Length: 598
Image (cartoon, rainbow, N blue to C red; front, top):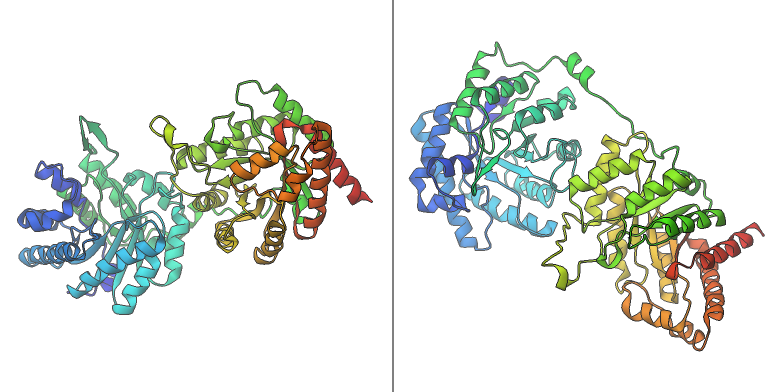
């Protein structure tokens, strides 16, 4: 049998189709774990493999997509039987067919857990003699590259194909852009080919292929769904035409894709149709390089959007002032806009708007940011949480905000919805703030190259374990975060953490958080009930017996004192407005600006 790498140099390698969907369709079953069928109905599993081979597939996947099991013994039994069944089907066919150990996404919650799931399954496959490995429908790295490195250590000649499941716009469920994923894995030197499968139709995957270089296409596989599913009753069906699918796959082959196959909804009829179309091609050729390169659109991302005055000022080394003001809880925006105009007159560089803090619904921060930007031409930093939106909603909102001139966003994971409300209000949390930043970083490359969104994160300088907080901040920087707005600085410990952050987060802009305390009651409430805020006892004692006027005077004094102490270690100040007291914040800003002029 010809070595697989040599075979692909001379032929298109045609894979089988969607094992799970075809199995449930053929045997009229609604089983949730198709992999256990290796033990229960091995002859049925073998018949599916045989049908695909007879249709013309020259590579088949073991029935092990969900081969991960906490029960190690059960996992071994499933994988061992699956590989044996695939071998039997190939031997009985008399054809030269490559068998691929098949892996879906690992179920771990951390990269380390995912890596462990992958490596435990890899060990069993290697013991069975597997040499070809397919990691399909992946949505991010998630421990996969370290697992492949482990595989290569144990079997250096292993053939590795990694395939990602992406939506028609090119983004995975975790918000990763397909080009970034493909290049990350190809540049690792650990994989032979990279690809796309599932989620999308051949037509839409073909559009994504158009954006790739000829060299990238030469290292690529495509295994799209039969189309898009429809639901009848409680069952899902794919009604796509076999002929249409086959012709679309031929078009992909003519664009230079060497490895083809099918995913959900593709039956042996689909694979037979693709085999016929490939046989009618005069020869196996790579698409004309000139034509492909002409179609490829290269966009160079600028470092700073010219109209992002906040970032331009930060880059110049001048200190900036940002003020947070909560959006209204009702539909009346007049007082908010008056406050924004007053703050603008006081000399702020940007206004920030929280995104439904403590999970209580308010006017949308991004929509309100658009209004402020449009009517006042004031730079805005809307907060955006991961709690309430998936990738589609996030992308849609950012597109609108960008069109309105918003160029800065603060991404946070978001306060959880109170337990008592969760039966009625569902939280999303499709990803955390770090992964959201990675997603938006990809959008900056693809959609906002001429005017990228500047991404800020939160930094809790009052965290009990600040080393962990700094590591998270560094991870956010790796995803494209350019700066941090800190929680209020009140204690000597938080000031020391600001100094440490300045040393550790090299290249990041830091806006030191300051919230004026206006009364003893206000201080005690924040100290006891607001997460991330610590008020020293001596500050609380200073407010005992103070009336409103004296409380505000103390608030101004303490705030200016804190600003002066942290000034050498920050790139600007981030003020939080207590109880909507805009005049108080304006006085503090004027005092600080006056001192800087002096």
